[in-house]
Length: 470
Image 1: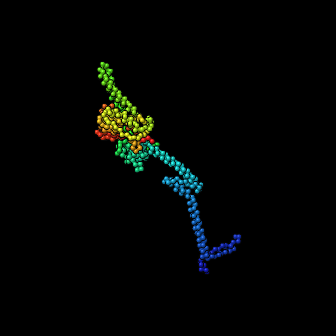
Image 2: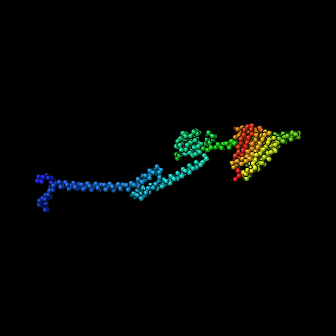
């Protein structure tokens, strides 16, 4: 117990313990201690306990931080790697030898997932690159849209035909980007009706008119609903032009063949029905028959020649030919014809050879056709000049006349099959309308070019350019 000591005048702590022997109490033992001394010792004890507890807490905190950092370091690595993967920055691996057994297993599983993801992304990227290469190399334009008609992909030709900007318009609705309304409507209809559609349109640009075939196919998802559509654009301008040319050729050839055949049939029927015809009339009929047969034979011959020069280059017997020699031969062959028509035929030829690689008979026929055309359309008293030279590494042959000339609008068509500037005069002279077309295709087959300069009433100049022989 504690009480104030009147003797010492301080607070004292008293302790009394009984002295026992067996069951008999012999007395009591009492001791007293000033309370200040006890308080000092308690204070010292509290200070020591607090100091020890603080040091133990700091040590435990440091140890916890170290253990926590060691435990969470693999998690931070995996978090950082996962964030980088999500942002597409890299595909780094996480160390597998750190942390607890569970953390090491988690790191191994993360690395395995990372490897599989990288392989799949590489496969997807490779397939995407292949698809992009295939689509960019196609002769057709390709456009893909989703169910909301937003552009998912378009190759270069598709962007050109639809007048799109690949970098700007991806992800935008097709009807917002393209002015080709027929294509927009066809895609929307294919998505709505979930079926294949085809349409042919004519697109007019600043330079020319293009015919485009559109084919729209819906893209179906797993539920069978349209997930979008693919549009394939194919320019068929050349095909349609060739079809038109083929129809025109068949019609013209049929007409040209029909005319002499009709005349021949009429003449032969007359001769057959009039066995008593006088000799002079019979002779006139036979002369007309000969002229029509000759015209028919010339037409068939020109058709065969045109078919030959329009075919493969392999059909020609290519050799080194002196174009100067061919020009001289053509001049000599046509000189009697020019004299009979009263036309002056002149030559301006060099004193050196002009070697070219070509088919001798085809080139000869081309020169013959040019001279024949010039003589036919040059009136009596006119002049035709044959020139040849080497200019800028090419053989150049010119046939110049003082004939009727060609109108500017006809100069673009003068090399077409069966085209005649003066149809009445051409038929009167027995022309087939194929001569200049044969010239054009012969020169093109030899890697050259042909051109014409003409002024109505003042004559024409036809010029052939053919590469020199190596």
